[in-house]
Image (cartoon, rainbow, N blue to C red):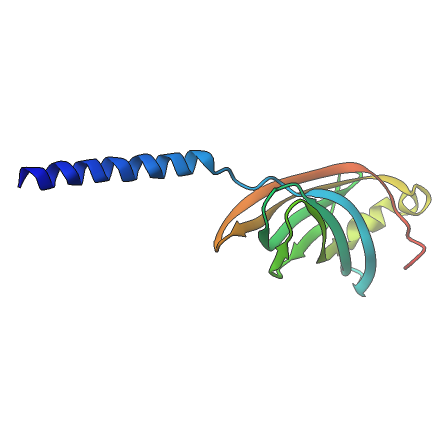
Length: 159
């Protein structure tokens, strides 16, 4: 009976050591790097809320392939809340490569109305995005926060 207990303890210690080593060796995925908005179309126009369909290009800095399950982010224009960016389609993202996602931006038109002429005349505006991407590998998903803020040229002539 004693040899069984010692071997069981040794096996348990070995398993625990292997588990801790694996957890320490693994690190979560890094946030994606924004590249550009490739396409922007009005999907639904309204006085209170409008919906824009976007195609956004990102870069995956991770040396491994991941699954992107969803994105939800708040978008601000000149530090005023513009709307919520939503993507809820499962996308396989290649390792260390550019990729594109389809997304929808639900725009609060009050911000556009209050900015009025400055949006039309000042095409170089501060765009801020703060959100969370649901990213995973092998069926295990985690939330990866991301931020983006930069002066962006807005081409409103296409609308």
